[in-house]
Image: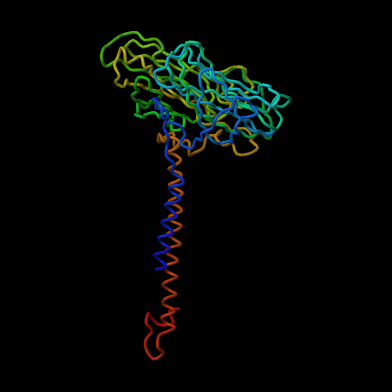
Length: 439
């Protein structure tokens, strides 16, 4: 009975452990199929900075913002780490944003000084889709603004026109930190850098369906990736890019199976975000029933000194890690080409030899590329899938360990029973389980 009880206890521990490390993925309750982080905590932004709710590093949050809304959140910073707060705005499907509609994220200190600001607009592609922006506090030698420890305030603003869609936008908010460096490196960017696009990746197309959000973005490595995309749908992918490497991405929308050749401007949008979910680049392409291709602008290699650049495309290329690609097909495609999925190919090149990163004063966290990241990119695992794989490996190890302990325990219990039987056996008869000399 003791052995049975030990076995039941081991199984129970494994079951509890498995349940704890395999959380589900939550989806948005509105019409847009965006996969929010299932671990996101509901929070309500404040109208005043002094009433702002504090955000914790490494945690995701959920909130919503109304038209022309302004919401404050609080982060408590030290004087050593860089801080990044990102906001993914998710409007409901069917809206018609105007030029200038978008999201603005700012980080301010207690005196109201601006530490960092980013604005992301829908621009000329007038259909709703998830967009992201971030604000940051960067520690810089010789700077006196936003360098002190204390309370800082994140201001999220929804920029709108009078005729813009009035519905609230859902938001996914995330706050992460980057450790300081033990020794500051160069701050000047090289004048010359490889800006010519590489040839298409070899190997032919491979099927890999995209995710529905940053949280479940499908991992990619260099290659040609084939999928289908529905009108109004946004597909998310992520690519590990190490220090010194460059990311090139091209997307091609295939010819229409119906033979229709109606002209649609800005039919497809391709966007790029950095590991802190800061916006990097966005491009669009028109479509007329024939193959249409668009490419991101050539971008500098990932480097620590990029953070000192005033370029809106170069500054976010400030650290290694997962870079996120998202492709959105205009819902207006339905009117001319029907509601069936259309063929899409994403071509990804990662060029350059990986270099050693800066001498961080602590764990780089998400701002590095690991062997596990490269394995996930090769297999196509999303973030949750890679996490579950690691968790199951721990569960298996724990199970093997528990099983070993259980077997040893059973052996000890059996041996103890035999010893008791041998000790209690009559002296003039044979031992019940064997000769005493066996012990």
